[in-house]
Length: 127
Image (cartoon, rainbow, N blue to C red; front, side, top):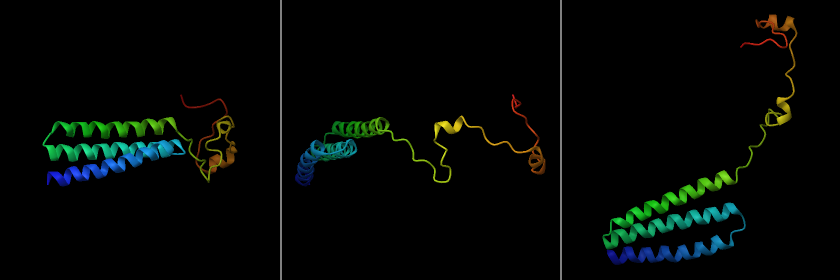
């Protein structure tokens, strides 16, 4: 059984070497981050297989640390490459910074009374 686990670890290590090539050749930062995630996951899998095959429970902690580092790297990358959200299709001015400077159209007092709203004049407000 130990030979099988170590063989599986060697296969994953070979695939890890191929993913390192993908990491170096990736065209965009997102592709490089996904390859780095693959390296972290593969490294953790190798550590777990070796830990079970060699009966070394301390290597399980190394696998957990690799997994956490890969997750933190992905979170950092997502914060670094933050993309502003696309504008809402039904509210085209929602993300326009100039839209905040524009005033909302005021309803005539007649229409406000019809809707049951109190009349509020410019400059008045609840404080």
